[in-house]
Length: 530
Image (cartoon, rainbow, N blue to C red):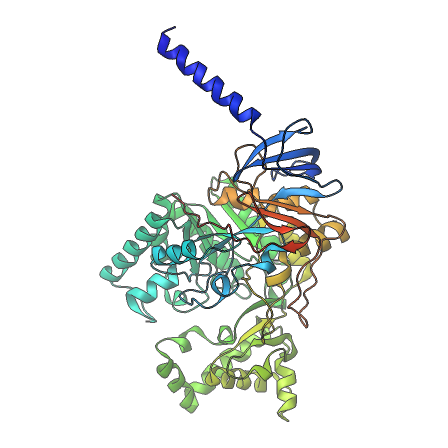
């Protein structure tokens, strides 16, 4: 053995000895530690040094600057929300920028938000990343690049296939975003202008994301009528695009689709059995939320605002649009009942917030009927548009999808705090609801399985090898919670309510929630795929 090799071994041994003697910054002692893998928890200690987990096991004899006894509590990886609206496209004064403490996330145990879902993302990404680095949040943030975003930049809201030059421009934008650190391509094929794209267009863009080891995550074309066909399209895009595919907020909308989750999950299994890579995410509620224009036929939303409103002034076209809305209310998101569609937010008339379409019609002295509800939806869009909550899903489908081994938990919510709106309670309660309602109260899935679906599973999906798990060397994103008390408090009638049961949250080794109180620390980082 040469003198140089001997010296190298001595230096390594010396460094290891120094690290072993260096005190931990923090030791969490005596908690039931769930590492995120889905395996049962074990009672042990977790040592943190800097931004990393530096020790596991009996650390009672080790030096620590601070030690917290967490006996009787669960110590888990910080949760990763793989479908987050923490950043609203190009809107700076909302979400993570308006509420950087992200308390509604922190109190659920969420430490990382992945944005850019449903085909809509910030572009270009370096601009967003710079703002987040200059004004950090309490949570980590990464993003997908949105198909609808790059399509709008390349060809506006045109209802047609792209030219060769326009497709090349979209591919170049996806390429740039992936190089800048996006985790994959998201699509919103139910939304405009994604609804105007053909499958081959999406495949062409997915291939670019796949070349950078990204995934394809999609709000499919249809989640009610056309659900099965949309799952088939998603699987095809993943297979022909050469990348993993994820059905985001997997659901079955409208009574005609109830029970079809058994068929769509079987399709996922079949695709994976033949060598594909298909997964889902889900929020744990039997209601969805999006703009009121989701009730409109896609063709009626093409073009700029003036063009869209002009269509509504033509009696014949208005009648055709109304017929399409009636069909959607009866067979899809409307649940065949105007009372199942509740206004979440109308910026131009906040007095409507929280009222369902039946209640608005009653206040206006109009008969409650589906035809009148369709006319009201048109009037709301003419007034400036609104977002709404749609109660049109089956609890049995929610449970079946949750139990599937390829389903992870996500919120489809964002960073939110009390305001004049009446948002979906998923913003405040998705993760805690799973642990409180579906794990503890209903035993739909096991605790360690739920933790896996919230942490390591989404981390592995996008290649976050050092997050979403408790192991030595991983980043110290850690949630400490009480399995016996964690629960969502937010309801559809009173949504601005923070979850309870989380005691401590660390992000990159920094305490963000301490003994149930926010510390004001904002150690969140921008996460890039490269």
